[in-house]
Image 1 (tube, rainbow, N blue to C red):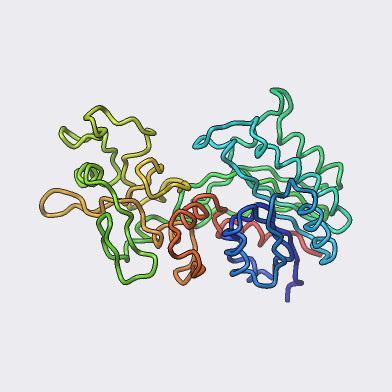
Image 2: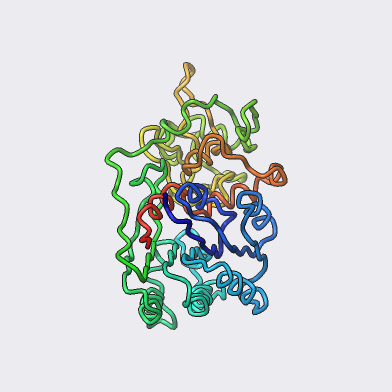
Length: 355
C-alpha cells in the first residue's frame, strides 16, 4: 500500500487537473484560489482540504497557506500560475503583475522548504522562453532557485496531452523537481485517442438545442454563423467555402478571426487545444466535426457542449459539476479551458519519487 502524500495546490483552477490524484494516495492539504467560485468548486471536490481563498500576493493569505502546508507536513507543491500573459492566445504581456506570480511561488517554496520535497510547475510552452527585463529567462531563475533549495533532480519538458491518452492537442510546459530521486516522465501512448473515441456516442445537436444528457446542450449561435458552418466540411476551414458560405461580418465585410477559428475539428484526430471562451466562434478549433447529411450540409454546426468539453479534456463520463455552478456556463468553460488535463497530471504523479 502506498504511503499517503499530502500536497498544496496553488492557482488550482478548481482542481480539475487533480481529479485522479486521490487514487494514487495523494491528498490535498491546503489550496488557494483567487476567485470565490473556483474556491467553492474545489471545496466541493476535495472536502478534506483547507481552502484559503484570496490573492496570494496578500501577505495574510500567503502566510496562512504557508502555515497550513508546514502544519500538515505536505511534501508536494503543485503550481499552475495564470498563463494568459505567456500564452499565444493571450496578450503575452510579461509586464502584467500576474506574470510575476512565479516569484511568489518561489518565495512560497523557500518558506516551506523544511518539509517540501517535490514541486510541479505547469504553464504554457512560451513560459520557457519568457524573459524578465529582456535578459534573464524566467525558467533559468526558477531552475537556479530550485537548485539552491536542494532540488537535486529536475526535468523541464513540454508535453502534449494527446500523447498520454487525452483526445486533445494541448501542449504544456512542466517543471518537475525532487529532492529525493529523478522524477521520470511518463511513457507516451502508442495510439492517440480521438474526437470520435471521446464524443461520437453523444446525440447530435444544433446551436441552441438541449438534450436529456446532463451538460449536453449547445450554446446559441447567430444564424450567420450556423449557416456558414453547415456548409463547412469536417476538418475544414470555412474560409475555404465557396460564396455565399464564407465567413463575413454583419456589414458583409470579410470576417477577421484567428486562422484556426471558423474551422471544424477532425473526427479521427485529437481536437485542438480548448480555450477559456469556447462557446464563441473565436475559440480555436471550437466547432464540432459534424457529419455529412443527405442534403449536402453538415450537422452539429456549433461549438462543443460542456459534456463534450469534459470528455475531450479526459474527465470521466460520471464527472459531476458542482450544483452551484450549473447555470454558469462561462465559469465552467473557463476552468476547462485553463486546467491541466487530469490524465496527464495523473500519469506524471504515478512517477512521483516516494520514500
